[in-house]
Image 1 (cartoon, rainbow, N blue to C red):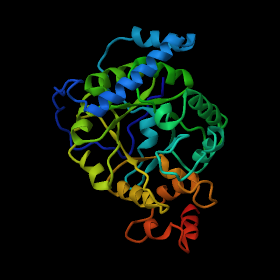
Image 2: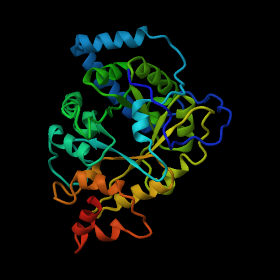
Image 3: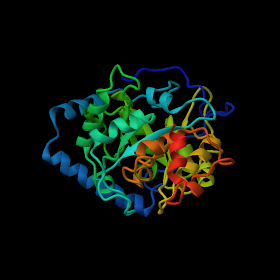
Image 4: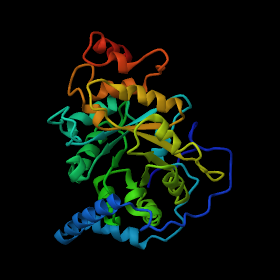
Length: 346
């Protein structure tokens, strides 16, 4: 199990209010048509995996989940990942997501293997690494999670040390949580829109049984509140473009007394060669988000010496202000772009 740490210095914990009533929306009515379609497609994939025969180690972990007491998933304890993602006010942490397939952007035809990019994420200051283990959307498998974990372990005893690895799969069944734990992941993602509040609650309990943390993906204020009420300690605003839209999902969040919630903003890649995503990360930081999750935007410039994934991570972490610096204006193909990002990297 992950080591329980003290409460982080800065986290989303408004003035104590009574806990919100348990969400009444059922798991069926809370899903839109797309969510149901995606869930059913993933369920077919999981069924095929089960029919082919999971390994003994995965089955043992699944049994551990089923044997666990069905306790309340809500906890005031701060997990290792939550602590790493939640730093002092005025700073932002980065989750760097590894994937082999980009979403139709055409920026990069081939992404380097996990063993190559894993140390880049670590050495340039990411707080955690995610692997998009859904083969349909990310082109990755659990083998990539294993490879990423193995490379990170090689940094044991070094500075910076190993980063926790997040298995970012579209979870519809507890056996996927067992697979993530077997691969060495420290956390998993659960998408509220796809599974609904009842399953979110159950999957948080299942992950807890294996010592894993859960990041709940949400796309509205209603889903964010439902996730917190279900026991989530880390919520990620996904599929929402623009800083204001992301902030609207958390600005009225009610967090019960004694609990803290880490808020993550998922940065969508822009369909151009500029690096507006860096500025968006700064704006999310200034709005009070604890962390940004970055995926396709990391690969827009390939392995350019000054705009590779590590450079973008370092730029997002920089203490620059949108008032005095603008990557949107100075990080495209124009003169000064490379020098600008190069300066931020220093």
